[in-house]
Every structure is written in structure tokens, then in C-alpha cells.
Length: 154
Image (cartoon, rainbow, N blue to C red; front, side, top):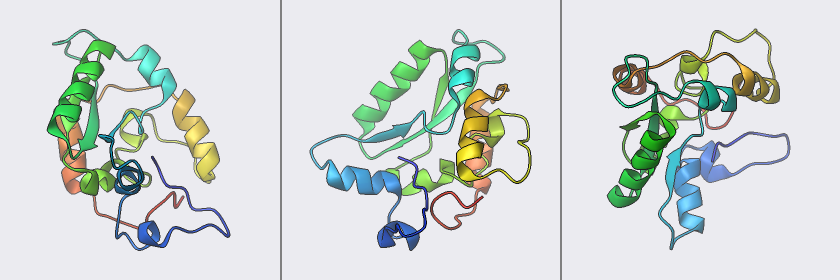
């Protein structure tokens, strides 16, 4: 549910920031309960950073959704997987954790090499060493994020 801009391909509603990619998915899956989670963290981190509830170095992951029950179910799943959940609001607010934001992989890894293409950045983020990020830091970064252009803009 992360939008990537490619030459010759455009989704005007996303390009103009009228919708988030998550809202567009919800629109297409109208009978579903969409929750955006686990989209901003690499697989290596998921395998290495899980911790028991209450651990000092437990990592928190954001989630967004329009259905409170569905968000609770996803938060419970994240807890079972060994992560705290931080509810950052609706699907309309999910841009706060999408590509080109501090919470899209960057908060959870060391600084990536410069000059990466979007594909190279995703590959880097998937395999980079993870660092723990507490819930308070997730909230702080989300609150400070400014909305920019939609899609990967590296």
C-alpha cells in the first residue's frame, strides 16, 4: 500500500494528495476493513527486533485505519509478533508513515547510502540492521512529519 511513481504511470488522486494509497485501497475493497501496518519496516528487523511486552528495547510500529475494531485486531497481532502498536489515526493520515517520511524505514535503520533509487532504498531497508524505536518516538516523528509529494521521491 505504498505508492511508487513510475514514468508513464500516474494516479492523479494520489499525485495531487487528494487520497492516500490506503484510502484508494479501501475504496476498491469497499466491503473490507483496511488497516495500514507493517509497510514501513524491513523483514530483517521483523525477524530480529521482536521483544516480549514490557521490554525496554521493544520496537513500536505505526498503524492507520478507519475501523476501530480492525485496528485493535492488528494491534493485537503486532503484540503477538513482539511489537508495540501506535495508532496514528485514519487512512487519510497514513501519509505520515509512507515513503519519503522519517517513519518509512529511516527511523528503524542506520542512515542509508546516498544516491539510492527507490528500488535500491527498499532493498536496503529490507536488509539493514534494525534499531529499536519506542512508541513515544513514533508519535513524535509522526507529529513532526510534513506532507510532501505522493509516492517515492528519492
